Length: 233
Image 1 (tube, rainbow, N blue to C red):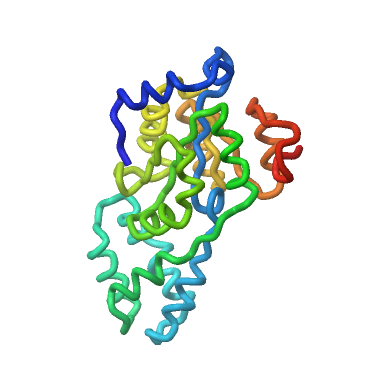
Image 2 (image 1 turned 90 degrees about the vertical axis):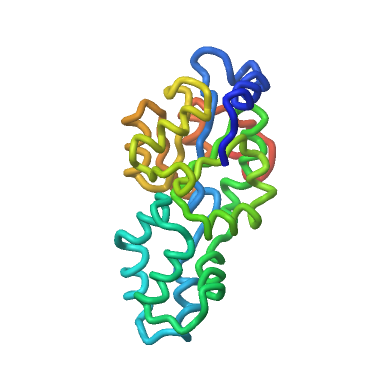
């Protein structure tokens, strides 16, 4: 989802003074998978079991542990080609529409993060930075519409042609944030991606369930002491 520089500038001007003061964080960038939304590829594998003689662990290795996922999430192959290759490699008897539905439906909200996002939006610019593909992104943009409406922009790997932890991904995040890299906090559940963000000059936070609020405060993010059951240190 690409927006113009003028819109980015307008977003910057709308930020509250606390977020634009020197030394304060300007933008928080959230990963999607296993941060905003929890996911389980096992749901896909379970739905496909009736359509193939290939064991689930072999399907997982063939599709999600090799070059194919990298190509799809980087936008180097399109959805139709990905589905064709998936069906052929895994000897699937279902059609491509059924396969796409099985691939898409793997997400559920992560309350620890989703409940916090509206509070953070009061003070900070919010971006989503996701290694993803058109099947997943189309699905979770609908499923998580009420959460994602708080975000100023979505940086999706298949749209920009770069995946984390490549520098180009983080450079695009900074470009859309319209601020210095050091005033962006990047939150991801994959340590390698956090390290990539830090190498590009951003601040990084490795997400581990259960301790997000105190770690955000330690990173200089302002949170209300008592706003709801989910905002506690």
